[in-house]
Each structure stands twice: as C-alpha cells, then as structure tokens.
Length: 421
Image (cartoon, rainbow, N blue to C red; front, side, top):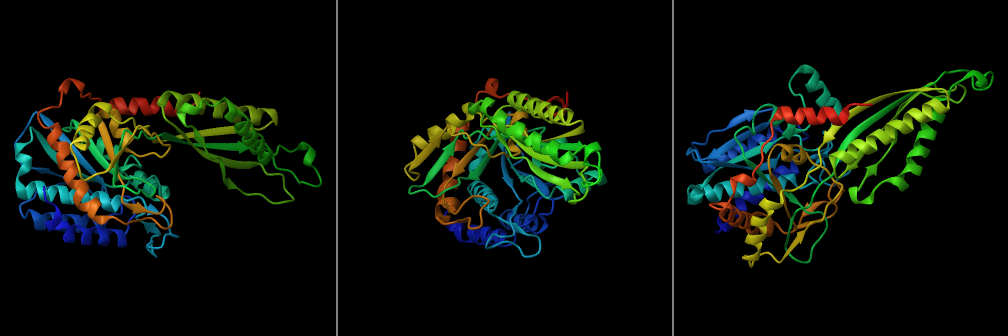
C-alpha cells in the first residue's frame, strides 16, 4: 500500500503539532488540527467528543463481530528546557506523541481512500486520547474537583465515560527511545505500573537552642525513613524492576526551630500489581516504624498512577507474522520490559492491548533534544506495515482469546491497591 502521495501533508501536520505542544486536557489546537485534516480527507466524517479534548471516529458504519481501536495520544510533556518547548506552557513533544497522531491520520486516510477497511472482518475505530502523560497534576485536580474529570489519565477517564465499551481490543504505537542503525519495530515491551505515595511526618516544634530536649524532629524521622528505604533495597526482587524515588515535597523549616512537619513523596514502580502492593506495604511499615522510633506520627496518602502494562502476547503474534513477511523494516526487538509507565496499562486490564514500537528518532525520550530523524519511515513505511498487521488479524482473531473486564472491576482493583493497612 502506497503512503507516499499523502506523505508531504502528513509530515507538515506532524511538524505543526510538534511545534505547538499542549499539556493533557488542554490539547485544543491539536484536536482542531487533527479534525480539520480528517474532514479534508472525509467531508462526511462523524465523530464523538469526550473528556475535554478527546474524540473517536469509526471507519464505515457496518457492524461486525469484532471491534478494534487504534489509539493515539494528543498531549505533550512538560519540558521547558527542550529546544522546541512552548515558551508559554513549557510543553514539548519529546515523547513522540505527535508522530502517533500523524501515523493514525496516515492510516485513516489510506484505509478510507482505498476502502481497504471494507475487507476487514472487524470494525476499526480511531480514538484520539488526551492526557496520557501523568503531570500538571494541580490543574487536573482542579478539573476533578469541578467534576470535569475523575481520573488524571486520559484512558482511565475514557474508560469511565464508556468510550471503550464497544471495543474488543486496542492497538497503540509508540516511539522507541534511542538511535538505531536499522529501521526497527518493537513488540512485547511491558511497562511498569506506579503509585504515588505521600508520607506526612508530624513532630513537635520547640526552640532548637533553648529546648531541643522536648521536641520531636519531623525532619529526623524523614531521614530515618530514607535510610530504611535505602537499606531495604537489598530485599527487593530484581525481576520486578522496582523503582523508588523519595523526595521532600513540603517542609517549612528554619534553623532555630525544630521542624514539626515534613512531607516525603515517592513514586513506586513495579512490573506487577501484587508486588506493587507488597512493596507499598513495606514502605508504609518503614514510615510507621521511623515515626514510632523517634516518638512522632505519620499520615499516609496513596494515590494510584497507572497499572502495569503486560502486552497481549497473542495479539503480538500477528505483528510478528507481518514482520516476517515484510522487507521494508530491518529489525524487530522482542520481550524487553522497561520501567516507564503509561495509561495503556489501565486499558489493558479491561481488554487485550498491544503497543508497537518504532524507531526513527534522535535524542532521549523526555530529553531536551528529542526529535524525529527518519520521517519517511515513520509516516510511510511504518503505517504501511500497520496495514499488514491489520490484514493478518482480519479473519484470524480467535474471540475465545479476547478477555473482557468492566470498569467496575477496574475500580475494585484500584481500591485494593491504594488501601493502606
């Protein structure tokens, strides 16, 4: 399938999005550009809006037994030091989402104009999701208090709104970090899930010179807690790729007053939900023990980030089959889990999902110099490969291997993770 005719227009749009990054739930200009392009391709297109800037559109109207979502993410990262960061909002597209969106548009245009989608035995819906990156949290908390959203992440929010209720499986794509000598794809790269933990240590303030004897030093409690975390790392199972990064988030201290409060916050990343719970309990025990040892108190807040993402191995077999028949892509990476996270993990709890990686960039993902260097591969060769993947799936998907859980099941799981013993 030839994507070269639309290449110039797709690349121009991608460059426009790259040059105009927006943070989650604020992607108004990005959404307008995407919809404008889709309406030029299909003047009769219909779409449904959701959660501020998200929307979905389906190719064709024929109902079929299976329904696949191709998902692209609209938002950028907060990275004001990036060389193409927006000077006003500090956002930068150094995670590659701008290419996701362009790939989705290239795929839509080609399938629509050739009517190739009509031969699929499944419906195909394109879902453009806001707020994948877990950041700008004060703004999202404001939206939550206003009742505009419930979840910080765009996919969990879409799940709540029923956007995925008629979808059976999800396909995402994502830039691979690092530079490659060969054009490369990646499958089965599992992602970590993470919690946000906040430990509010409470002590007793006194004059540091006159009467330190009757004080309870909250800062010392936090220091003991950090020491406990450091010593406990030896007991963490390496196969779960645990990541902990405690920082001081809130403290009002002066040198002549013993501090009576300090907040230590940390994310907690693991490759499994069960181990996330176990390590979370260990951190809580360390915090309580540190407070008890120095005669203080601690209050614990646990906030869910994203669930771990285990890519569906069955769906990945169709990607591998397409790669084996392909002579335009040189290499395929397989089974390399990483400790990055994404809200695709939450969606994958409800239904099978895969996220296919693609090379073509220079610089470090989320770094100051990230940008594409092989746009022909990203906007022509790779989308053509995705058509091959869809063709491999058509007529061959075994519905018995496609699971389904409800949004209520998801909420129950989140509650079980965030409860504090």
